[in-house]
Amino acid sequence: MKNPPSSARRSAVYLLDQVLGEGRLMSDLIAGGVLDRLAPPDRARAQRLASDTLRGLDRADRLLGRHLRKAPPLAVHNILRLATVELAQGGEPHGVVNEAVAIISNHPRYGRHKGLVNAVLRKTAEEAPRSWNDLRLPRLPKWLRDPLVEAWGGAAVGQMEKAHFAGAPLDLTLKSDAEDCIKDLNGTLLPTGTLRLGDQGQVSALPGFAEGAWWVQDAAAALPVKVLAPQPGERVLDLCAAPGGKTLQMAAAGADVTALDLSDKRMARVLENLTRTGLSAKCVVGDALEHEGGPYDAILLDAPCSATGTIRRHPDLPHAKDGSEFGALIELQAAMIDHALTLLKPGGRLVFCTCSLLPDEGECQVDEALARHPGLVTDRDALERPGIDPTWITPEGGLRLRPDYWPDLGGMDGFYIACLRR
Ligand SMILES: C[S@@+](CC[C@H](N)C(=O)[O-])C[C@H]1O[C@@H](n2cnc3c(N)ncnc32)[C@H](O)[C@@H]1O
Image (cartoon, rainbow, N blue to C red; front, top):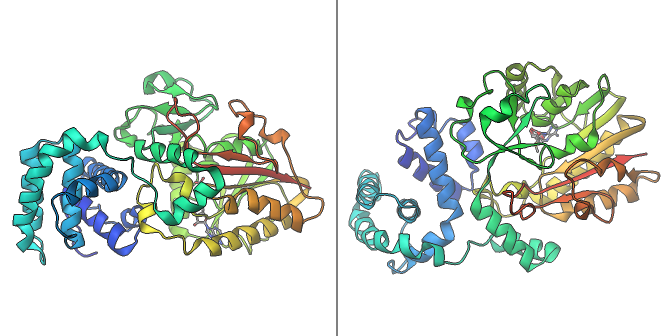
């Protein structure tokens, strides 16, 4: 984009237009530079405003629907939605309404809708703060809700939606020598060893960031490497490595790590993270299906997937996607498992994981791999790690993690993890 917007609210509206109109993901838009003209605090604010609006979209539309005879053009609707969510969160009505009117007034196509925006928001300014919490909890779209209800039942999906609406805390994985940081960061140590912070603020300003004492990683995302349990000096392959949270864990454990990823841009993030934390790994840009560098003692396959386990942190996902590309991802995951097995030493271990809530990308994928490869077994002992609840272990011997688990601790991402051996 030639001229990205230059204020946090305008940028947030631009993000909403792109997610809801073009099916783009916020992470791709941000990596493409749409927030680059903003100072870091405004960048964080634009992202937060867009994320909060997407989380509360269903509620905002219900409130706005009371005052709209028909849906206005998307760009106008998104300005109304953003302002409604800000009002519901206690935003100062005069400022929020005026800014929304200013944004629409300057819109190249829809400036004539400024009267509508003003009139509708004056009404929602009164209603939003008092009726927001009485509105129905936002639901996942049908394309995703239906298969999740089939897999986990309606009540569990309702709890997942509650977790999605609440959003995610900031989780940090600490380098083993970084215990000193814990008290400065003022977080809570979770049963699995992740440090969870309540108040997020600017990540790069937190104690220990510059020294590389920790990295951001959801508690669930930290578990695959704990299951793999890399040992000092072991030859380990991280087959889909970027941005590198799991590479860092394995390097911190003293393993001899090869980190591979298809994307050179994303691999640059792995290198940045290794440099900041003072850890080392051999970085290779390449296709996991063609890699020939074995044999390895252990392989981590954190395969590309629907990412439906990360909706707490990526509320754009259910709005930008429709599930149409998931079939191809499921086939790719199976091909990656098969190729990874050819790179393992005899007796070596392959940890397969996805940040998905769909059994097709987890339980079924492992069931099918066991059927394709006689002699392949799941290693249940590998799942016996501190903080892992035995009820999370699945019949085929994997670990199912869901956003509605740990409700009193702030939830976790959805993940599936299995350790395979032959
Ligand atoms: C779920 S992410 C990995 C996250 C990473 N393990 C971490 O913990 O930070 C999946 C990664 O797979 C990479 N990828 C997709 N197709 C690939 C392929 N054919 N070969 C290698 N990497 C691939 C993507 O670029 C993406 O970085």
